[in-house]
Amino acid sequence: MARMKSRTKWPPHGFQVLHAETGMKEPFSGSFQEAVDFEFNFRKRNPALAQQNGWTLDVGEIEQYVDQYNAARMISGGWYDFVDTDPLPQPEVFGFTQKKTLVGAVADRLKGARAASGTIQEMFGNEGVVDRNVAESRAAICVSCPGNDRKKTLYNWFVTSIASQIEKAYELLRGINITTSLDEQLGVCEACECPMKLKVNAKISHIRNHMPKDVPDKLRGKNQNCWILTEP
Image (cartoon, rainbow, N blue to C red):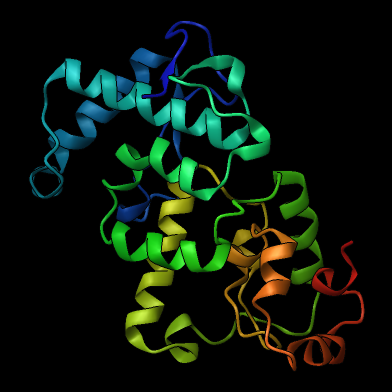
């Protein structure tokens, strides 16, 4: 299982803890001990949630949780120098299946994670996610696109069960730090009818291999510069 090489050397953005399932939008960030203290107090303040997820107040267990959470975050961000793994995944083969295995201890703590992981598997397949700079570039195109619908909710676009799964998928990705700085401005694409917070992270090969034949024309009708059309 992945673990941090050091609990004293600060990783990128510090040692973090995020409980997206509670509506927490920004992760706590600090030293390892500060993250452990935050997690301890979070569990103590939320006994019902702790019971539901099998969380304890044992300091050793919390330290392991914080360590594994941040190791998963380092791997998802490509910061392999901060992590010990057995074995260490190679970037060129680091796809969704391997990532889900390594971060399972984190993702499975999220409510609805099984349904969410199914939604992510459908969106990403086995290809995994793109680099963050690619996702950021795509998101910038989407937020200025007239086809980016932010007025209607997921429940207007999708049946309740699917909308709920998509929401949990959002939480799962936030929990392992797969986000863009523009996520709050991304809605559902009126052309391809996909939730763009997920789609901007998908490999273009997977998107095109599973895109209905009429979608490219719909995309052109909204934005000739759509990244789905223009990426090599």
